[in-house]
Image (cartoon, rainbow, N blue to C red; front, side):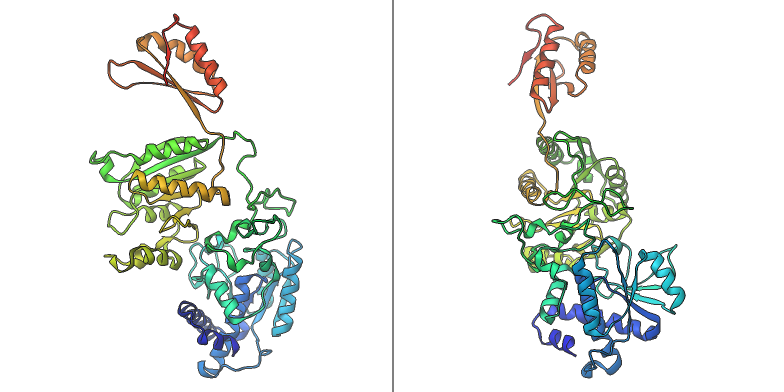
Length: 506
């Protein structure tokens, strides 16, 4: 069989391992269920195209034995389900039906939604298991295994996921090595295809001297960014027109000076015990203010999974972005990723791409288990790779993990984060906060009431007070995004007192 031969003759050992594992899952399923009891969900995308050819190979390996899998290409009896949608790309429809004709697929076209279509199909057919092209990182992959029963409320069937542990790189290595046809949209810069209303070419593949020409999908350097061409829908119930920005992501707020909020979590008992002074939290605060974000909270969590999970759970739902540092590494106290996984209700799972980065950095010097170090929250993680970073940063939905242990490392990671933001719209950059301070020798009791009134007059500004020493001068700090408003507030304050009572500071 040509697929089996192509994989076994190639030099890609990793792909050979993935292939062997996937075809084993397929053969196992075919041993558990009869041909009449299994089906294959095909949608014309790259993942299901890979699964189609794995099923062809797995079926013939199951039928004739691994060393004599040479059956007729037209002899493929596994029932194929295609959910045809009016929102699908014409190229997807054409590729699906051309593929069905080429390989003699027994295709059932369903024009209902996925759940309703399955309910109708399973009432008519004795199907007990369905092969799916789900991979770790897909929104639907959270909590799934290679064999997973359908979710509560759905018709009962076994979900079989032969390529669950495959990466974006593995998918394209298979398609290119086996030299099989795939939908031509992938040669036009599309890396993850949904409907015509929520999919655009991935801007990371845009050819620099052209705004409408893109490199093919297999040239995407970081597979974690394959969904960067997906647009967020305005309504889940319609297929209406959607605004699209340069990377297929709708912004959180189209206003130039919209308010975006962040929280910062440090993880470390050494901070709570007063052994070390935390310098990273204040640094992140300053950097976020410099790009226009408002920091609502800076907290420190104990080095245990429950404490981290509780803090992440509290902050991720109340702010736009959470930045977390500390507790990342091979030590027993490095529980940050496990805490994040618990906060999102997912498990930690090995990631081969991340393990490869760790191997290049640590090599054989690691005293721990590299596989364990490469475990990251399943199904919600994106690796933020930059050529200046030996190990990518980790983003779990709206939580960004900073692995820096000192300010110099953090400065480098932040600079890389800003460069990634410019190319992929990772963070929305707003007008920076500006500030100005004045100082006075007046007593707190003398300035308390006038300052309270001033806050009411300028609700758009943050007006704070502090002393650097117990009997030192009182410093009043003005912070906002409009320099003119800050100047007006300072003049208004000065008018409330005798001339010279408040002096501006450099």
